[in-house]
Structure formats: C-alpha cells, structure tokens
Image (cartoon, rainbow, N blue to C red):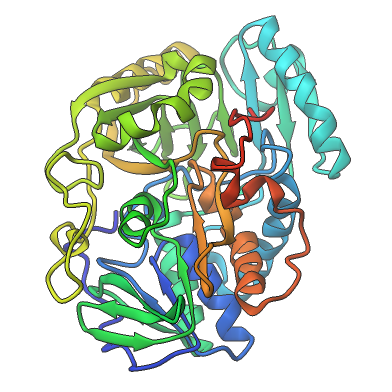
Length: 441
C-alpha cells in the first residue's frame, strides 16, 4: 500500500500562480488534473501526503457499472471507456482487466433486487444479465448460490499502481503535482476565489477544486461551506496465491473476492464498515437516518475517532492560514484493519470453496471512505465563485474517477458537463430534498 513512508515522487515546489488548483491527490483529483492538463490548462494539484495514499490505493479496484446508482451510470459508462483508453496508453502495468463483475445470490430476495436493478443497466447497454444457479456454477468453481447478476464487460485494476501511473501521465501532460503540500485555506478576494494558501506559500488561481476525500468536509467547513459528509473504515486483505475459482470480481452478502495478477485474491466483507463517533456524526445524524435505516446491520459503531482523524473530537475546525493545519498533522490517514471482519471473510471463503479451505493472508489493510447520506457524491460548483466541490464518492470513486475527472474539468472551464448532474448538486442538502439512497446494489 501507499503510506507516509512511500518516497515522495512529486516534490515541488508549487508555482506562484496557476489557472486551477486541485486539492487532493486521489483518483478524482488526479483524473481531473489529467483532463485539464491535456486541454492546455495550467493546473496544480496539491496533496498533503502522497498521491493515492488514502482510499484511492486501498479500495477493491473494481471498475463496475453493475449495481450503480442510476444517476451515476452514464458517468460510469463513460469512465469505463476512458479506462480502456488509459490501458492503451499505459500498458499492462495498469492492471486493467475486463473480466466481469458477478453478484451472487443466496436468497430469492436478492435475486428480486438484482431483477429490479437490471432495467437501469439494460437502458445503458451495460450487458448485465441475470444468471441461474446452473449458469453461476459454469462461472465459479464452488459455492451453492441460487443465481446471480453478471456484467461481463466490467473490469478491475490495481489501485495502488493505477492512480500513481495516471498521475505520471498528468505530469507528462503538463500538470504540476506537489506532494507533502497541504492547502490550509482558500484565498478569497471580492467574494470569489483568488487562490489558495498552502504550507509552501500562496498560489494565485481563480479556480479551485476540492477533491479531498474524507478531509473535504473539514476543509470546506473552515471556509464556510457545509456538507454532511462522514467517513467509514473498510478492511481488505490479499491472499497468498491460490487455485483459480473465478477470474473476475464477485460478491455475495457475506464476502467479496477478486482474482489478482499474482495468483491470489483480494477479499473483503461485502458492505461491512466501521464508523467512529465524532462531532460530525451528531451534526449529520438527521441527514443520515434514511441510509442507516436501510442498511443498519452493515455498519459497526465504534467509540470516538482516533487522534488526528478528520472527525476526531480534538481535531480543530478552525485554524490560521499562516500556521500548521490538521492536514499537516496527518499526512496519510492509515487506519488499522478490522481483523475480526477479515477473519470472518476467511471463514466465508472457506465455506464457499472447501477444496481450498481457509485462505492464508499475505497482506491486510484498511481505508477510510468518504460517504454521503444518499450514497452519491457532490460534484458541483460551490456558492463561492471559482470553487468546485468533488467529494463524497461513497466507495465508488476508483472506477468512476476518469469519468468524473472529465466532468470536473468541464465544470471548472464553464463547459456543459454532458451528463445530468442534478442528483449530485450541493444545494440538495439545503433545499428540502429528501436524502435517501437510490436503487443501487
């Protein structure tokens, strides 16, 4: 995994001026920087720690249309096409493999949910289809599933490799990327963005994109822009090399697994998250109630967030721009994995594939996912002229990153984004809209 110990690749220093400054070196910020640089825009990306150091290198690596929220699907379809283009430019090292995503059902109710989502996939020509138990057995060597939902054109890539490779492509196109460079504040003049103040000095720019993942709420709140964003921990493991039971990515209601290039599997618990209680939890409780009611069993509530986390009780909500900020105090958010959850995943794998048994783990890790009450992101221009917000990807950011990167570039440049973004508008949190998850899987 990428961590604070990973050597700095983009040392800077940042320039004194740019057309656009992007906060955050995850997949969203990196893809936006790539698109802007390829258009000849002078763009600077500031990352407080390491490129892809947090959730962008810690996710499952799935690039899926299947099960997406219907409002995300058009952007995701574009994103899949862009991933294919990136693979053509960057080669096999990207780890891009179009080997399909399979959802597996153990109960008739799950098959009904798959069938209810299928018309959305059909409308976007995703190639998704329902499978019988016999058809599942033809794909997966093991298990006793009653059926499934299968999208053979969906893909995956190795996130800790892919995002840094895309960052290198952005740099080659002319983007300036600077690691270990926290942005402390916006510079506002005459009511609009005039630049940013970083730990390395001021950068003049009339357009800024906040793509800070779990840190976005903290930064925006200090600038007077409120969003109800919280963070949850997801734990993941990689097994030692094992016999192949399925070449793509699959999940049922107890575990998920993907075949890795090294012959092992990436495994995780489907939908299981840990949530640490902090100040933001109380402020946002009402907004998140519909999501909690829908899927309360998947989230384990933990005591107060660890020191230095964005929602820790001791993390400052305000700071002076000429002094160190909370972003410098926590360069890379590196939560310990929940080993009890991963042990349960090992057990589930062994039950499904008794011929293999309980897999030995080669590595374990965890990441913090930025999530929103309706489980879709904010991708919108903010009330502050010159400010664009792109955050709250809710665990879906890696796959959809290239598509939203292109959309963000259009928003920044004042172009039509080419997709209906009304579901992702910032004002939905203040205009009386009922916030609830859509028909996603």
